[in-house]
Length: 88
Image 1 (cartoon, rainbow, N blue to C red):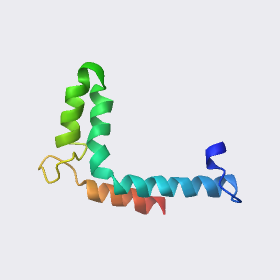
Image 2 (image 1 turned 90 degrees about the horizontal axis):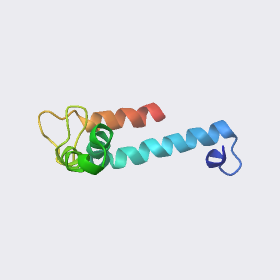
Image 3 (image 1 turned 120 degrees about the vertical axis):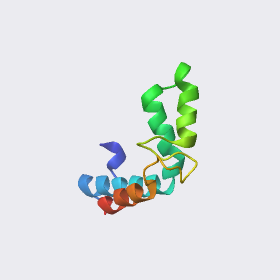
Image 4 (image 1 turned 60 degrees about the horizontal axis):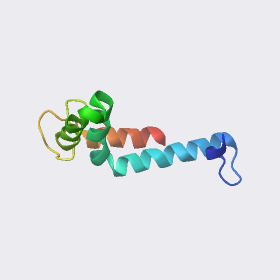
């Protein structure tokens, strides 16, 4: 695959490098996009856009929104650190 061809690394090493970079960047922005992603996959855009934005702001039982510390939100910090640790 073209995107995973990085310099002189073979395909598997390049793919692992990109997977690690993706996990680290996901960790860096986990509160911003976690709730938005959850809202988009549940209600989408169009008529569901207001619900998507509300989920992005306050989160849900499966995602952390932009406002941290709400009691029904999962611990997004722990989930993001697990993703980084699993990446290597």
